[in-house]
Length: 546
Image (cartoon, rainbow, N blue to C red):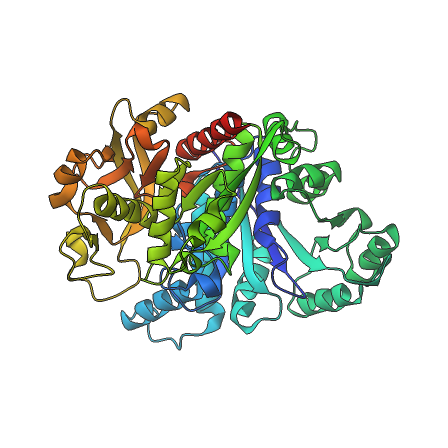
């Protein structure tokens, strides 16, 4: 039997960063997947970090974690949310990983005395990795997003590897994502795109397709100019317009006939039917929901950079779509909830639900605790994630169990009541990268609890697996005293006993928190069950008030 011939699509951005290569790559993948093709994405990032684990959210946005514990770029969250896939860590290729491997091989003498160079040694390493991802995942099509912008020093060698790959593989499609500005209404300027294409061509790469971002619809005249000056067929110039939700983009591209051009180049079946019915239903519920708008506060410390909490926000979008409600998310800086009498009430009273996400460091912690206390006392639905669980436990210990000064040893090493303490395996670690409790871990749910009911209702097993990224846990020495005060331990790791989920007693209304980052496995097709239950509780509270 002949070996499957994998096909490749390379997406590169030009002119400027922030054009949405990840969303475009995911949307194209969705259209191929909806026709029955097995697709797998790869992301190349030029930075010399081995992974994203040590990056500050203020600079880089969210650190996304995969099942296998790999800490990756936030675009992987987009891939998984669109494709409903759990992607392996091998799909993340960074400059740090590639150079580390080259140096390791050189030190072992694997290059047999050769002088080690960008070409062929570095480019061959990249091509081998790309091919291996396709092979290991039995992919029909590998989607390769090139991080950064064409012309950047740090991605030039990767683009060279893709140029070489295009000559070694019969079926490779280059897509250039560009920006078409307009200086006055209706006057689109294609010259920057023309220059960017010439830069690509000077690197030996001719894009087969040009996809344009712009503030107003792409005109036929603009298409004609791009086609003429960029050596691209006119029917291969596409519009990537402003959309009402990112999940609408596959539908927009499908209407423009993008699959036909991809199929022609890659030798795919042009007549293969597409199935986007369920996707369109979910998108319609985001755009025109039947239920009332639910106002949710995300109380965090990285609110100046919304990308720091992108998976949390998207999980809320998925849950709102699932219950067919509108959604309004607002960001509340936790430091603003400290020190001002009545300030918490003023800042939070407008919201139907409160969410405290993960985070590191002491700044803003007491503000988060104040928000949790306010939610509990006013029976406002509360959901905590990672640090949100730890601080929910601290608040309960202080204000219900009488453990004055209870805290996490992360913030107060001398606390009399260390209800949150560092994981035992973390105490000897000195290096920072990839050293936390990372990746998917099992959790057994307690029958009759909020967590148990929410996962059961979603049709999933009540022995669950969710992703983690943390160094601290609920101190095992305090599990019994906290339980005696009424705190519900509704989920634990079956082997280590690590507390995974806690809940308030029913008298305080909906209050649940997870040590896991359950937002990381939420997809439009499969929303996170506790997020759905959280927004359902918020909608019921709104109905009772009206």
